[in-house]
Length: 166
Image 1 (cartoon, rainbow, N blue to C red):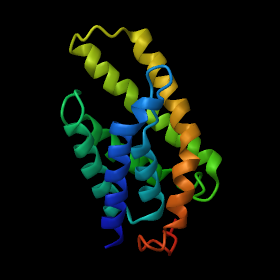
Image 2 (image 1 turned 180 degrees about the horizontal axis):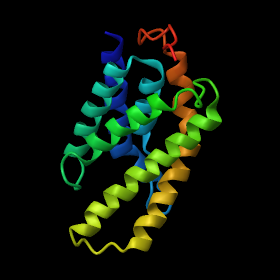
Image 3 (image 1 turned 180 degrees about the vertical axis):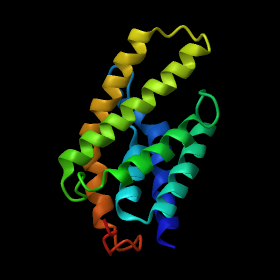
């Protein structure tokens, strides 16, 4: 039941990312809030639940994207597994390593998304894709604490009060 509530939060983050955040973009970049929710699930929930959440949220993001279908689902799934594997070095309560990793994954997602669009001959150059990916990475890393702290505060309502064994 707790992962269902986290899925609802992820869908709300997706709608905020699509509807609200384009109004505060910097250098044509908006923070990727879904990476923050996927990282939270990967570090606090069992891996099966986190992987399921990442895949479902990625599929929903793919429905709202012009990239080839499955791009977001695959990258969010890989991101959840990556966060899970690196949880020994990423402390769940220390925001700096979490924000840096979330920013790197968001930049990677943006670069893959931009490469898929450039491959489809949309007119994007490699320099524009790299510049936008760097801006998304920095913006997401800066926005991470504003979503991470409330998620940590709601951990009990998600049924994630017990720490995941290392």
